[in-house]
Image (cartoon, rainbow, N blue to C red; front, side):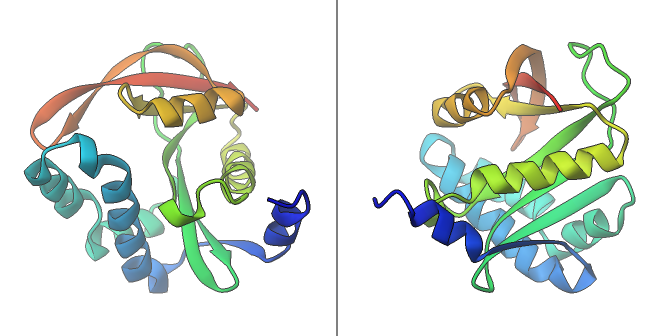
Length: 181
């Protein structure tokens, strides 16, 4: 790849906060990116159940409207290619801070991996976290997603603990990762 490619790509990259008109596109993208990320390593019925519960239009509309959420959409040349959700929720017990907020969801379409979308999207999520008064950003991440763990460590997150996550009726173990802003 030519060294200038990410610069050219980022010049055509735009972000905006989601509004109620975005619920369908967000639900579709959330389902697509979740399946791309987890389908190969998980039971199809668990994936289906999780997507039904978490990525429908009604759920996305509710999250977009919730003042404790900031839903950021990433576009490249008007095409929706990724999104992030920052949520002002209490941190898990392994984080001893009053001013940490969650990077609840953070996904880029698979065909856009490695093309300069993820880090600018993370920068937008960090800005959103600061609007809640946060100086730390935390996330829960499935312990079997080595690619994601390597990325998060590369961008400054540190493993600080564990938490349980219900997935399709099964309790999974997630890393708790924390980044100073």
